[in-house]
Image 1 (cartoon, one colour):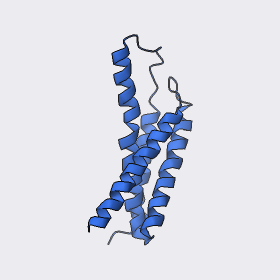
Image 2 (cartoon, one colour):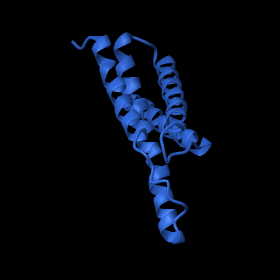
Image 3 (cartoon, helix red, strand yellow):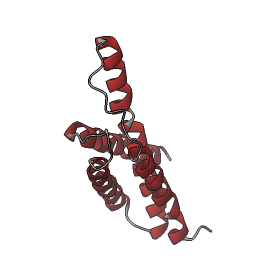
Image 4 (tube, one colour):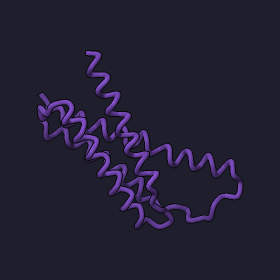
Length: 127
């Protein structure tokens, strides 16, 4: 049997990975002249928030399952922990050279968390 405290290692390790990713300095260059390239870059960079934070929310929900927390409470707690980390990650990113913060990024983080938990709940309902 897996010890509940040991399960908490995974979300914290993954939060470290996200921290390292948001610590990578930006290029600091002005907007790209080519609008197609700029659009593709924005979609990739902004879109990456959804799967990154979806996995974090899923890891939180999975790790909290070992603590015998009711499903709805676990989903809410996993979402809140993911959202709080998304906010603090944007704050951390504001200190990284060449990077900036965005309310849209936080909303995409929360969207990723919500989608993961929506599907997590749906998978449990199929069992």
